[in-house]
Length: 129
Image (tube, rainbow, N blue to C red; front, side, top):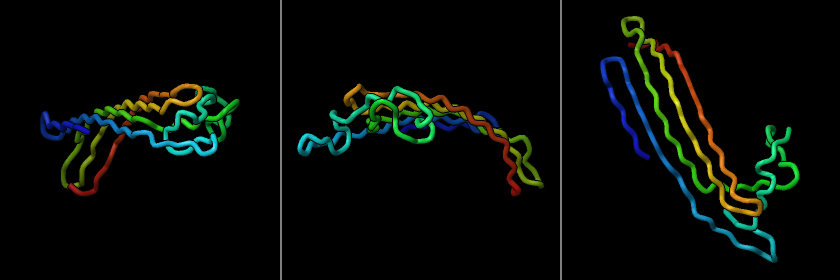
């Protein structure tokens, strides 16, 4: 993970971070049944199919979706700007953008991956100066 924080002028904080996490597979088969993490014999055939159960954390339709996570990558940037800072505390506004990519280990049906774009905003009051 790496990051930068800058203070271009008083009351403004600008930041950016990037990071990656990765894990190695550790799998084995017992009597033809796949076990472990990242086993290439795990069933990923239902990972790209959407159903009502997908949103409720239920089983994937027409097959399974083990999709053990292989790698996560994220890049984030944002800012905080003081709107008021005085005897009555501090009011700050902030915004952040994050891009997250998840890649899974290859299995029967392929190696699913997904991207998420996230935008967050916030208005905060701190009762202390």
